Image 1: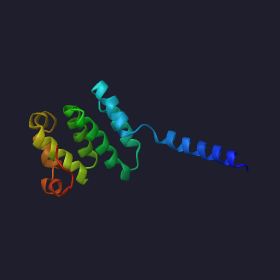
Image 2: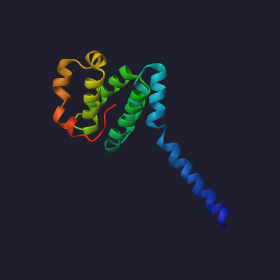
Image 3: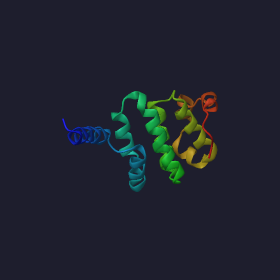
Image 4: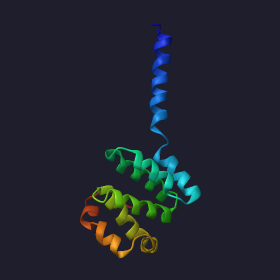
Length: 131
């Protein structure tokens, strides 16, 4: 094979792998923000292997949080907590919403939900900084 043909084949393989991966968590979070609907993020997360969901949720929630879509971020944190309650990042986000946005937290997290999923001792052990 010629070097150009090898490069072309490698380029096609790389393109195919990237295309198969789908949109990023940040892109989907922005789409969710436009429609005020966490659906795009939730559908993409459901299609991921369990081991990749936490990082995906973290990136999407972080984008919504940083862009001041805090009520939508809290809705996504709620769904994340239902799916992955034992993840440290999930507990971090629950704590973040509770501490930084208490009004939003009251709207998104009812007492029964918090009793079932929130683990303050786990949230404290997460090394993330607060905002």
